[in-house]
Image 1 (spheres, rainbow, N blue to C red):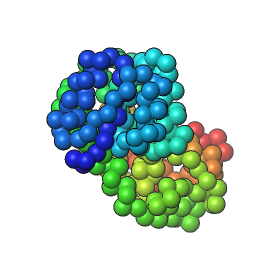
Image 2 (cartoon, helix red, strand yellow; image 1 turned 180 degrees about the horizontal axis):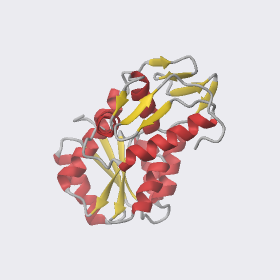
Image 3 (cartoon, rainbow, N blue to C red; image 1 turned 45 degrees about the horizontal axis):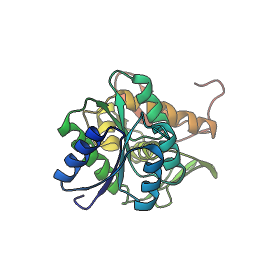
Image 4 (cartoon, helix red, strand yellow; image 1 turned 120 degrees about the vertical axis):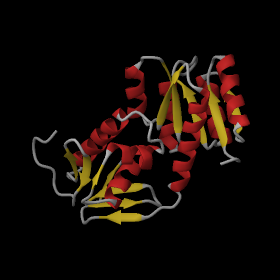
Amino acid sequence: MSNATILVIEDDPDIRSLVAALIERAGMRAIEAGDGRAGVRVFFEQRPDLVVLDVGLPELDGWAVLGRIRDLSEVPVLMLTAEGEQVQKVRGLEGGADDYVTKPFDREELVARIRALLRRNRRDEDRETLEDGTITLDGAGHRVEVEGQDVALTPTEFRLLAFLMRNRNQVVSQLQLLEAVWGNADADPHQVRLYVSYLRRKLNEAGADPIETVRGLGYRYRLAHPSRPGRA
């Protein structure tokens, strides 16, 4: 992790310099960009291990930058959002961001979240193939198929499905999912509910319905079967 390169895309020079200094102090390498277009250019030139991305950027805003990154890469993205902007957080997660930190941020928390994302991403290099007769998850190729039909998942959705499949027929709690998928037991539990709903929708559309909500306890992965008409 000490040789990780982190791209900081932030238009406020004071915040950008602070984040870069925190990253360097933690033993990682920081590279910087002050607007969205420059951020996209530096991203594809430098191929960083993680991106810290502000939402309110000139030239291209954070949403556009996130979209361009996600078009071609699964690198972890941590978004910086304004305080109290829940809509921004949800939009970022739906767009493929892996985590978010609200400004003004706690310095130690920011570094901890960066490290957690890097650890989680490197664990994904230990890849495997999981299948249950309907769904096949190919870790090496980062592909999911439902009866031969490709299902496009974000990196977080992919990790969530892999963890549920590894623990099939067992009830797993939100805390377990936060620790295993987000790498941070103190992350917002709302992320679990959001991502389970995104994953369910994509699997349902492909004809599979394997994730069961166990009220008050968590979630359970059962053998996939064709989704029933009218299920939300």
